[in-house]
Amino acid sequence: MNVRITGTGSALPDKILTNADIEKLVDTTDEWITTRTGIKERHIAADGEYTSTFAAEAARKALEMAAVNPEEIDLIILSTVTPDFPFPSTACIVQDMLGAVNATVFDLSAACSGFIFGLSVAEKYIRSGSAKKVLVIGAEVLSRIVDWKDRNTCVLFGDGAGAVVLEASDGGHSLLSTHTFSNGSYWNLLYQPGSGSRNPASDRRTFDDKLLYITMEGNDVFKHAVRAMEEASLKALAANSISSEEISLLIPHQANRRIIDATAKRLGVESDRLFINLHNYGNTSSASIPIALDEVNRKGLLKVDNKLLLVAFGGGFTYGSAVINW
Ligand code: UT7
Image 1 (cartoon, rainbow, N blue to C red):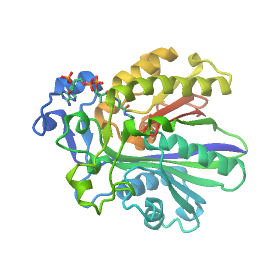
Image 2 (image 1 turned 90 degrees about the horizontal axis):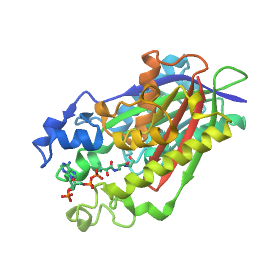
Image 3 (image 1 turned 30 degrees about the horizontal axis):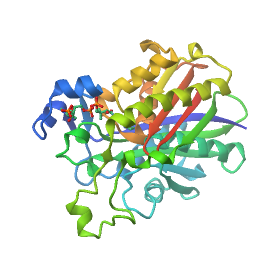
Image 4 (image 1 turned 180 degrees about the horizontal axis):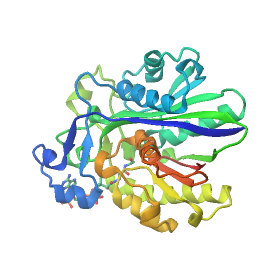
């Protein structure tokens, strides 16, 4: 059974925070942020907007493009590290918002690689015959777990969501492969120390010691990210017996312009086959790849039989890749 992507959607908060705005919050400059990261602005959720808000909007747009009714969906996989609540899953809330009454739904936690992990799980459900129509969503409101007094991290992240509809198909364009990898020995280089069972939110110290915010060893993460994204990409190319010259578009996780450029260079992918939009959105974690995919799709940049390579890296560490024949 083949797996087709029949719809894409994305949703972003209206509120935009530019580098100039951040200059007023912490000791930084537009020049530092631009040259070190490539980010110029990011979208930030307003009061009353949650991860489910953007997840549901992105999903509705993907369903509309696919011409699929919410009741036809068998499975919703929602990747996030910023759920509305620790439980129930944000996927349950989105199921209710969409009226996807026949779906099995769950959240998936693989940080910035979560969308690729979601695609991989969805692919297996469809290929095994356990599901026919699946929504995979990456959605984050990272602005709520960022310390807006810490210049090392607050300049990097943004909010938003992206979604795809996957359907079982006897032919047509396909999700050709997915590969997922994990290396738990580096879990403490990028994580949120507080709010779980080790440092519960109910403990005053968790709040006082700022444990509710993202903690990152940026330099170490950077080096691992480049190596891991290259490895995941090469595995994907080898599994499909294709060379990097045959890739029409590389869509990497959007964390840092320098990580993206270094990965593309190692793979021999020139800038005209590399998609970058992080200047507009910052790092939206598991939402970054589906937002990018929706952007290129709606701009009409994808042609039938184009081969897309998606590759991600994130906290855990987790990393992964997917090849799509559009
Ligand atoms: O989403 C998946 C996982 N995340 C990532 O992939 C992110 C990976 N890491 C990175 O993107 C980069 O490491 C950062 C952008 C976070 C940092 O860039 P860097 O080139 O690794 O800088 P650095 O951490 O080595 O810091 C260099 C200097 C430091 O000053 P000193 O100690 O050399 O005096 C920092 O204090 O830059 C300083 N700095 C800043 N200066 C101005 C750090 N943040 C800022 C800032 N503005 N916002």
